[in-house]
Length: 574
Picture 1 (cartoon, rainbow, N blue to C red):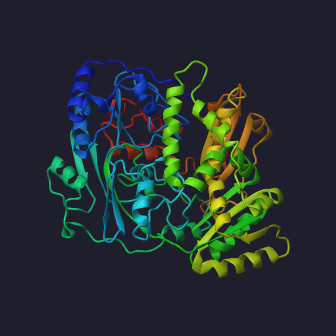
Picture 2: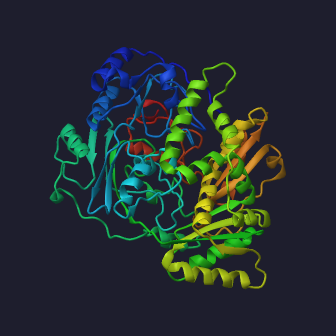
Picture 3: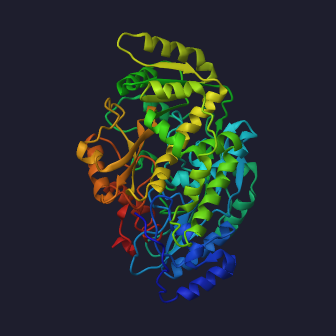
């Protein structure tokens, strides 16, 4: 579903724009050769296209000045942090035909400033979730997301811009109403909007310079919100309503930078942090009936006391696939930690780019090498986890606060003792808890790796992140035979209490993946599900009319990320 990146059109004034960018940030940070731009123009799963240049500014002021050049030369700007490529929104799509595209990479601008004894954080455009997690840990705090995108280099701003969800039941989607960003208004004038709640002055370059340096006094900063381990989202999840709990088109979570999908140039966001729960209890649950897990979910939602911290579903098949095709992720995280995995992902991306230029190697040679190397390394998965993998078809990893350990164990014992209930559970020791979490994380990359290793039999990945109705009892999809026969592989996993599932499929050779995805999307929507749930529309989903109108209000000049949500790529929205 990807095509190789090519050199962009050289429209009038392109050379002048390149020279202006070089004066701002230095020639080595203005990439124009296809070999240099490829890591930025090609997504891991979806998305590729042509660009005039990739810009790597080293300061917020340089970002601002580069944007002015782009406006002056009528260029489309794609703000890019980590180029995850889950739905293609962080890279270029099909050629516009009239306007050149530049990617503005923010990763060099990665400072984090803590406010109010670390109860809040101001994260600049390139600050990663992993860096924020590491910074806050020293203060006994944690960010919104604690595993998942944190390990592939995703940024705080990227999570906000896409309403990323994650595993945390009590916290809800990544969201803030405090941000500083640039927009281009109806007549092509750049506006700097400072809604950080920090008084930084009035001159744009002065504001951005002070922001980057953290140059403000306590009196300049508005008060923090009330502290706690969750948000109002927890009560929202408890409602068994005929609507999804969270999804990208939900207007509740669309506010300026939040959910903007790159339709603004965001310089920084201010987000709340949460007390780090040191004492946690993990329970591993197995059953052969999906209905048992739904009944258990409803029992917890109706119970007094706080909700679990997380409740992650995976099938036994997903467990097996992660054990084989997500093994490098599992082993690296278990024995070397998140920092090593971040470096490994970066190295693998670089190596894929280098090796792809060699005859006969393909676009994912580094993945294939990693797969073969790690197949020689023992996984050492704890015996009780393997036993449940063999006994039960459906698994739930439940994490609760330490103070809820006894009440949770009592609830589970009572539930499985009832007539008609099948399944079992056990309380994990420390190694089992770590291994279960890492297996669940390994599932997220397993289908992609399977596809890489079976390219001769496969046509493409067909992936979904789906927000099911909160009251949907038949939550686990059963595909019609005519669709299932077109698939080599199907993997189901996700954030069970929120009814947000990831459904990763590998289509057989000869199958049209675009037509198949449309057919499968219709089936989901007929059930009242919302697609996408948390990866955003990118370049593979048409945004609903209300979301498109929201994008138009954010970006009336259609300056940023044109084409996202299949909106018009012409200036003025055509």
